[in-house]
Length: 588
Image 1 (tube, rainbow, N blue to C red):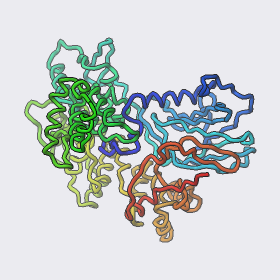
Image 2: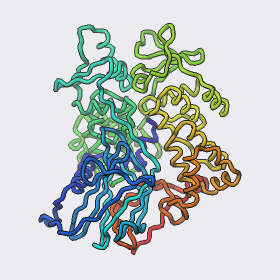
Image 3: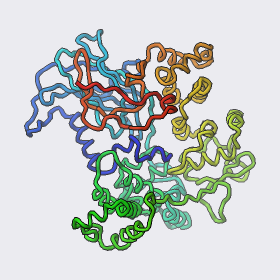
Image 4: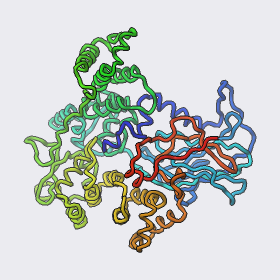
């Protein structure tokens, strides 16, 4: 998982730190699933005896089939759920999305809302870019008139990720919890998280009389959150912040503690006072966050103002935290530079070339005559079925002509590409250099590491020339990179329209697969995001305006809240590559 996925300033951080955030979200989703809705005065809202609106859901120009339950629609492994209620005298249609299995997933779509009084005549009245995932609020469409008999949600997918969570039924090691339940994990994978857990694995492996590793430093759910970070799951650290923090602190996972601390310090989606943030760090025992918050408060004068107003730090923090962490940070800040920080990432000791004496946690991969060493549990989690086995038990990696061409194309050393790929596979691993993305994808494709392959296709730099645009389209076709193709096809109607027109003019689009070429032609001629200067669908930034109002003629967002989920500085280069990220919102 890349640091970009854990960015505390990104839109994904929006659903974050406090458990109250998730509870509010759950309550909101319950509201959408209840037929009886309470009014603000505490009385039951009576459902009016009116005919419900007929709702259709279409994705990528195909009407979805009905799901197993009433008012549900199936799209691959996702289930669209429609619920209609009457609230405060108004009719509301809620659209939510659920996974059909325990999974980490997200769906980014262009969405148009159509309304009509007849099923065969529907008009587009509202449109925007939406992101659905396990943390998003349902789309709430308020129907303002009873003349709306039919309503249709039309979507075109910009990005879709779906990855089933591991069931922990396979592996060489047995983990037992206080409640007596057991799971199985791949041998040595716990060593990825901390040296403390690695020692427990070694003891387990050396003792024949030890049937299982006892997990007693945290509850079962917290331990599972740790495993989700070790396994390739795409699970963000904010999915269950408190449980993950409890597990990371209990099992001394320094790298995770650093990222959790950084997340808390820089979390800025909803306002938090210094005391709220400081208290959260103390309650969750995040020592790096406690130290940094106290340090920064002393630097910017917040600490002195609080003391002068009567703040009692020892009572607030507890004596041990105050004397051992807070006081040293305050004293250090008094002689520090204004831009100083105490938050430092722990040093990662990743060595893929040498194997320390007595290290039994790694597997050897022979590649072009050189042995590379990777954690055996991590390799098993990603898959080793495509690797051959040598005479000495080592795995033998493939060196395919396509990988050779990609390395030659960028003047890359194949071994360095593999090292960056192996580092990326580790928890919180850095994304490979942009010049190596294509070669890493080819290597992952050759060895069946599909999770890595799908993650890396999101790391492509936007094309700025016709040749770059064509190269990405051809590459996506060859290796079936669905999300790379989706985003580049959508660019044909917005930021890359001129590039696509140049390729069509010179007949280069003919070498693409029919579906890709037809998609580009359709977007150039009839794309939903044409006229990007005033069209919200030309962007790929999801809105946070989830409450909409519609009638037969028009629809609009109910502008309450933060607006766009991402705010970014514009530059000439980014405007050319991404298109204009701002939207024009006309308020009545």
